[in-house]
Length: 289
Image (tube, rainbow, N blue to C red):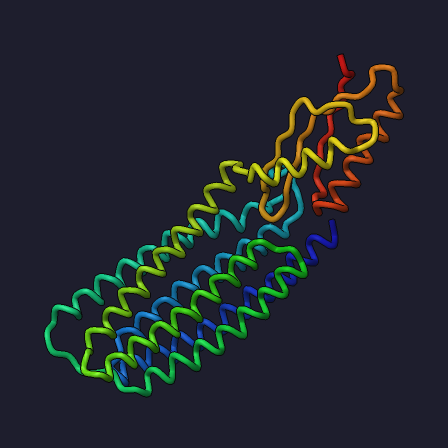
């Protein structure tokens, strides 16, 4: 269990790096957007502000999830990060709507200044920086098997793509089509909403004990191949924060001893840990009829 908490602590480092990067890049983009007159760059900066909230939610959730089990939370606090991500999705959705409203309003303002080409350069530099954060967090998330940090890494990647899209919109505006800059801002707003929806959908799926059926079949297959298991009466699994909890009812020969049944249970737990990295397995043994 100590290793699990150490991995969570490493995940906090990745979330903190994301927050620092977003603080610097959002300030850079917002200032540059106002100076160079780019709606797309401003929208991208506001997008990064929402990402600060999302990364902060991940950081807070990871810190709460490091709290050991207590009398009120006998399974631990691992779901705290999922709850925090759910709250962040609502905040991101509100900002996404605001960005779209402002961009649409600017489209109907009539003549507007063409954003300076320097703003496209700012967007490209920011995209490169965010791609570096994405690569770092992705590697760390896979190293410690942290789903929350992996989701944050995917958000880093989408932000890099948003900055590239903003650069394209700004460059297009140089050809006498200034509305392309606002159109790019609308696209950024839509991407913010999509990211918010993805986080909301994944969080609610986990909080309502949803579990992928294909993965459940893999677990069933592993248990069924365990020596001594003659049948599986019931198998359930759910995600608890970053960890999977499995409950299984197996059938064994009615003539074996209690010790033999215990050894079969230990074998199932060992296989779940080795093959699927699942540490929490509750095995109920019943005689085959």
